[in-house]
Image 1 (cartoon, rainbow, N blue to C red):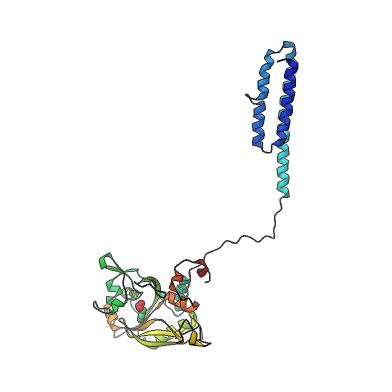
Image 2: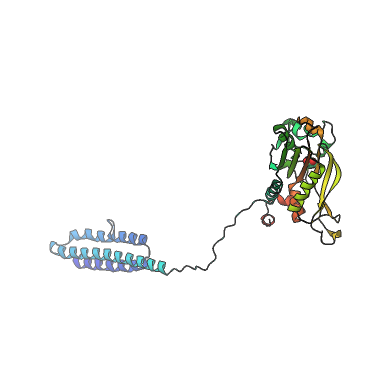
Length: 346
Ligand code: DAH
């Protein structure tokens, strides 16, 4: 290749590079193109290898021309990188922040409605001095039935459709009443406890679920009378459901209390209106909230408490039922389906 030709090729490489450079907008692209021209296998280096064949007197001029092109390319690269950095900084400075935009609020969870009922009930009974007691959900026949006065062939056992575990040696407790027995076996009177927790029955319809919550109450002391039971439950109803509500007791049977009763309260949904179409109390103006009674001496004998000295009362209520009565919910399944449209209402 003749000297002139080499120099003119070199000049056009330089121009070509300058044109390519303005199209590029990232450092990586720029470095890649730079290598294509100046790198060991680059186009400028390829031309340099031609230089050896030139007449010695021309080498000096051509060498100078190479140096000029190399520094021109290097200079152009630095210039372009500087431009890009400046543009990025300017864009950064010009980016405006809208301080009036509302912040993003993260949804936060809250306790489940049944947990709320439990906590609130425990707090209300706590105002009267009741402490919380607990027992296992897997029980045995003695605590769940026998000590509570359910004889082996007692028909009341059939009413509590039991889930048996371990070939029938154990069972899922069908009510919180076994906590009465456990507490009386481990503590001496006076006893004043509430026992909230999950219970299990083979039951499944709009008002029954195979698992549900109950709260049990037990008071054992000297001179405990039915009127004490009445006072405690009335206090609870007024605090939990409404100041203007009355309660009534209907005679009923539970093996562990004598006398036993079912407890009703006035229906809070229709108390000030026409009850005839009330879907909560079905027009009766009363709703059942649980069972209660005076602890049967037979039970006290099972746990070695002196029946001459001590008497007591017990009561049990369903937690979901309380939530249903307070909020007008008519299907117990709502509590367990995890539908946020339902749960976030409470
Ligand atoms: N354990 C009973 C049930 O689940 C409810 C009950 C009734 C509890 C009367 C009591 C009571 O403490 O005195 O059906």
